[in-house]
Image 1: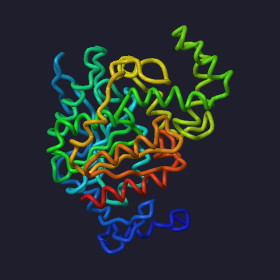
Image 2: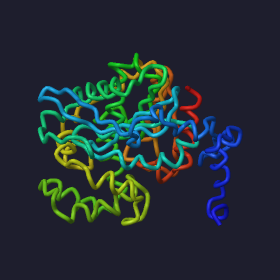
Image 3: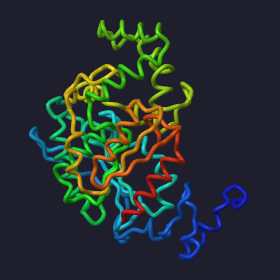
Length: 350
C-alpha cells in the first residue's frame, strides 16, 4: 500500500538504512539528481543534545538596542548553504516552503530567516529601524551567527529580498560564494516606470481609471482597491492562480505582512514606490559584484523581465533564468523552470 501511494517509499527506506547508491539516484522534483544521501543530509551533528528542528534564534544589535530574529536550517551541505531573504518588505519566510519539495533531494541546505519585524522575529514597531543599511548589517550578523562563509554562503533574495541581497553583496561580497536575485530589478525608478507605463495600461481602461481615483484620494484602505487589484493585477502579475486559489504558503507568507514596514519602505501603492526606496538604483554598480550571480525574471512579473536579463549582462559573472510562464512568484506559477534553473546554478557553482 505504501509503495503504491508513495512510489519512492522503498528508495527512501534504502537511503535511511545507508543505501548511498540508491540515494544518489533519487529524483529531485526537477530534472537534476541528488548527489547527497538524505540520511547524511538530515543528520544531526550533536545527537547527544536536544534537537529543535534546526531553529536558531539570533540576537541582533541595532541602534535601538538588541532584538532577536528567527532562523531555521533544513539539511546539511558544507558546500551549499542558501540563506533566504523574503520579499515585501514585511512578508515572512513561509512562501519559500516550496523549496522543501526540491532542495533536500538535490542535497542543498537552506535556511529560513524572518527579518526583523517579520514573522517569528521581534517586531520593535519602530519605523526608524525599517532602513536598508540597517538591514544589511542585520544580514551580516545573521551570517556570522550561522557560520556562513565564502566557501558555502549562497544568498537568495526575492523581490525586496533582492534589493537587500544586492546591497549586501556590494558591501560584503568577500563572504559570499554566490548570489541569486529573484524577481527584482536593480532600480526602483525603473520598476515604477514599468508598472505605470507597461502593466497599468494592460488593465481594462475603466478598471485602471478607478484604481487611479482611489490612489489619488489616498484611500488605500478602501475594500474596493483590493477588489480591483486581485483579479486585474495580483492574479496576473504577482501569482498566476485564480483569485482564492493561491498556494497556501503564498497566502500565509503575504497575509502576515508587516504593513508598517511595507508602507515605510515601499509605500501604499502597487504602482511604483513612494517610501524610503523611491530613489534606490544600483544598476550602475552591478559591475562591482564579482561573485557568480543568477538573475531570475518571469514573463508576467511586476518587474520587467528584459531589465532583469540586462542586469545579468552587467554582472561580471552573471547569468539569467527566464520563466516563460512565471510572474512575481515564479517559484510557484512556473515552478519546474524556476527550480530546475536555480538548482542547476547552485550545483554548478558549488
